[in-house]
Image (cartoon, rainbow, N blue to C red):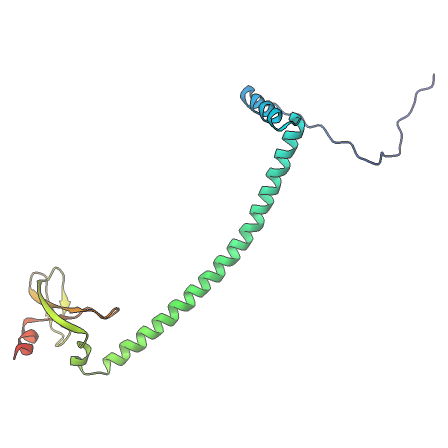
Length: 160
């Protein structure tokens, strides 16, 4: 009987390839139990798990590109907002400098005597006030207003 040669024509459906691997005994038991629970063969379960894992990784990689793009956009927005806020604050500070020093303290509704823990300057006369010295801190309800300090001499001029 003559020997038959394999057909050179390929079949319409390609055959799946077999890939073997060694797994620990407990993983084998887990795979078999999960395959039984899902009514699949172990081979089909492993194929599904591998396909899902690759789909998940592809999705994560695609999402990372979007996250990076969104983060760059957000960073630019925050930077622009910070610049706008800084410009506005600088303009307000410059406007205040042009006012009478008394007007700069208009937001203060009372003065509280304190013992200074760190060095500062009197907001009215600019004299240096050192740690341990008694000074006066301005109390204010104005959000964003600079903290105001007065030395004893300047507070004394308010009492007159």
